[in-house]
Length: 93
Length: 248
Image (cartoon, rainbow over all chains, first blue to last red; front, top):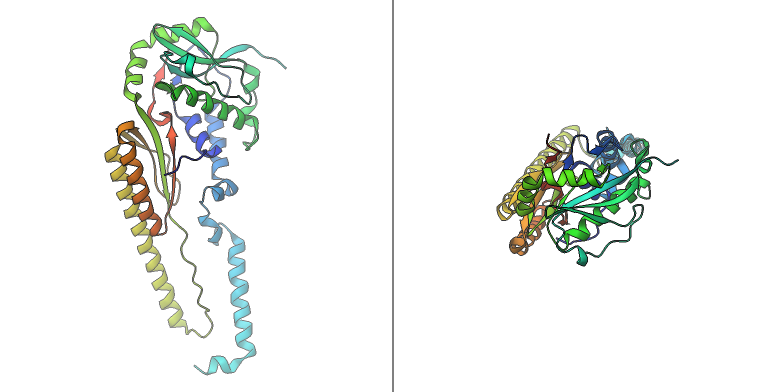
């Protein structure tokens, strides 16, 4: 467990929706904190940030990353074409 | 484009070691000051409230205004936290003026004192465990019969599910051990593929044991393909969930 400098996402997660809340007249409403928190959640969940955070599970998932499905299809097509050009390889089985 | 003046508040503390606090170089805020009342103190900077205007309409970015303000907030809380117990305030807390700040401190004195005692001598640590990526099938599919292909695919799905179960077990073991060494633990918002996202409030005397357990059991989870992300030490952000207002 290293104490490295914290990423912006780590700081945002703590500073925005944690900590003591002051209610009532003495608090001046300067920012819509709920809206801001929502925006920040989306930002944190965005692909680029998530990849920095090591959460890149969807990059290989065809549903979230259609390009990876495309690559898989291309690979299979190439395989089938190769097989079609060399029918004996298939008939050997 | 100037709005009203206000006091942006960062933390509540006792202010007994304020002269020792090394004030951080701030990116957007002015120099922090202390407003004292009844043995408590509010750490504030004077701000133009227009500074926050439009912040919630801006796209968050690493070098944006929000990032600067948020990093300032964390830097100020940390600077005080290094010397004495603090209750961090939520970002964007602004009070009108000094009398308002004093009213807040005087009306919430007992509650604040209780919470300061509770977090004294403690630091917060965060641990997140995510499912690791599944190993990609590298064997060429050519030359496989349909039945072989289906059999292999079923096997790899079974392996994947088993791997996920093992990762979940490792995350659970990690959490049990860490929660046992902590004074308090809270679960944070879950995301898909997240096995554990928790914050722990750890007494300084238990920190060595806590960090050892985190390292050992974290390694165990990594060995099963999970990713482990540990952060800390933090001021007790996740353990100061209280609302303060002026009574009457």
